[in-house]
Every structure is written in C-alpha cells, then in structure tokens.
Length: 257
Ligand code: UDP
Image 1 (tube, rainbow, N blue to C red):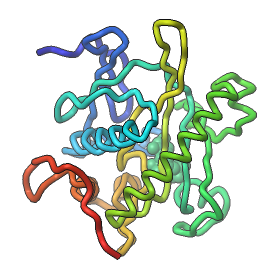
Image 2 (image 1 turned 90 degrees about the vertical axis):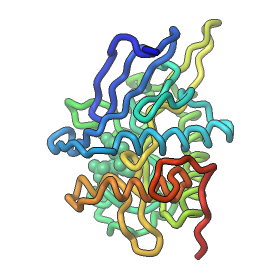
Image 3 (image 1 turned 180 degrees about the vertical axis):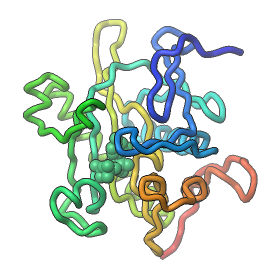
C-alpha cells in the first residue's frame, strides 16, 4: 500500500510527506547526521531505524501518561504517522546537568549538576543559527502565546520527570534534551498544544550512569565513533531489541544499582 503523498519538507534528519488521510503526515527517519547547523554531515547506516523505534516508544509512553502528542503510530522500520500540526518555532531545551552550549556560555564544567532543572528556548531559524531567546521575545514576537508557553512549561517538566526516571531505571542519566511543540486545530476551531517531532538519542544527551559513556549524538558531534552501537544500546536497555535480532520486547528491563 502506498501510504505516502506529496513530499512536504526535507529536514536534516527527517523527510515529511502528506499522510493517507487529510490532517496526517508521514515522517521518514533518514540515516543522515548533521551538526553545527549543517556544517558537519555524515550518513550513518541504521541511525534512522533506531531513532524511529526509540521515539515511537517514548511518544507512546508519554501519550499514556496524558501528554498530548502528534504521534499516531509507527508504520514501518523508517516511518511514523503523525497528526499534522502547526509547529511552534521553538526548540525547548530541558537541562538537568551542565553540558554542551550552557557549559560554554556560563563557564560551567560539563557534568556538573545544575541547581535545578532549567528550561531554555531557542528560536528555530537556521539562518540565525537557532539563537537562545527569552520568554519576553517569544510572547512579544508572537512565536507562542503566554497560554501556549504555560502549556509548554508544564509538559516539559512532566516529560523531564518521566524520562529521567525511565532512563535512570535502565542505568542512563538524562543530561538534557530538546522538545518541539505544535498547534493541533480541531474541526470546531479549537486549538491545543501538543508534543511533536521526535525524542531520540539525536535530541537528548544520555550518559551511562556507571561509566559516563556517551550514548547520544555527541558521539558524532565530537568524532567519538560508535554511534549506531550506542543508539542500539539505548534501544536494548529500553527493551526494544532482543539479543541479536530485531524482536520486540514489551518494555525496559530495570538495572540495579
Ligand atoms: N539539541 C537538538 N537540536 C538542536 C540543538 C540542540 O536536539 O538543534 C539537543 C541536544 O542534542 C542536547 C540539547 O538539545 O541534548 C541541548 O543542546 P545544546 O544547547 O547544548 O547545544 P549543542 O551543544 O548540542 O550545540
């Protein structure tokens, strides 16, 4: 069955197509890896399949705990069906531990715990390099309304609590991650804020709790190698891969101590 319609948009790691029904979208996960606003590029075979599976798992769990999302279902190894939403042009970054840009910007040591979880916003604009912005900018320029920002903060806090626990249970520290939200319009003209895009090792920093090993896209950004092995390990710990094959398992296997 050909479930895909017209190609709507090609991003750095995903392609979006019109879905089979009006108001739906097919998201195709590519193997392309980019960093530093597209300056660094590589094709990493198998990355898309892993991100598709990991993001499906996380969005499904978040949906079950009452976070509205655009995710409908996984279609195949590389594709997901989503509700078509209007993307709010913000990258919402939640941080638990200093790493990456906040460490540089504020002179913090990478790995230092933050005094409390911090939410930051970047304005999604490739030409400007996704600049950090304040809530003032967001509401003044109308990128999101105060009500939408309130929804975003409430959801981001709940998602952080849930994911921190989920990953801690399998021996992984959730250092930071990026979320995107959209507006879902219903036929009666109502609009609600929903979680969109993906949550995967491409958009999170995940460190092994015992060894500190990086299990995320920093393996690519910092030329550490072994990206697919690291993403496979995340999927395995979440219970998404059995042994050597691709069999599905019901969920995470807890790691002690
Ligand atoms: N992130 C992302 N997409 C971006 C920028 C950041 O998914 O365009 C994620 C990144 O993987 C990390 C978190 O957001 O988990 C915080 O990233 P940071 O601001 O430290 O930027 P980076 O060091 O990745 O440039």
